[in-house]
Length: 295
Image: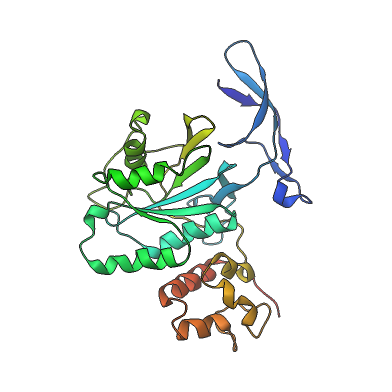
């Protein structure tokens, strides 16, 4: 039943009990109350509290400049499982991009898994370095391809009685993967652009599909860039599972783990307890956060 919104709603998110966040839009995954208008449509009168939600910074708008304001864009709410979908090639695997998606999931406190699609394109055993790395961080990692029915069955086992969301860069084969797991969905797909080797935006909106009893899957548009919303420098390291055991060992309580003497993270990198690739990824993200810390 298509529904429209009544006015503006103040949503008191459960994890922000002391702060009211105003929104005039219900998102996919929200539980709502509505009145039947007797014409095949409904009028939403209330939106329930969200258990969680996944968001990012809204896409950059031309003409706003480097520091133009970018608001929060909420993709979906009340998510049980978050699947980050990337690919081996076409577009090429990029661990820095993957880390940004993982941070979005960590900051929303979601159960996050990694799907590396197009595994039939793996040409070098060195690629398994990334598989082993992310598994060591506690993330379930699935290697998938169109031909691999066994792995897709393993993924299917995670869905029962849950709301699962698929998100990733454009062109990684997310919609094709969903069609493989759920053939009856028949989601439209497209190929990667030959000119740019970047994905095309085949899925243009966020859609929830009913898979079974209390079982739903949310498909989202692929993105060219991902900037998690609401990050502050002093909290970023908490979203890196491989950093957490060292955070209380730094000399300074508000250490940014970038240059401070006595930093336990820097020492862990030097001792190869934390991978240099993950640390470099952390520094790149840290550099994009504009808030300043005063000592």
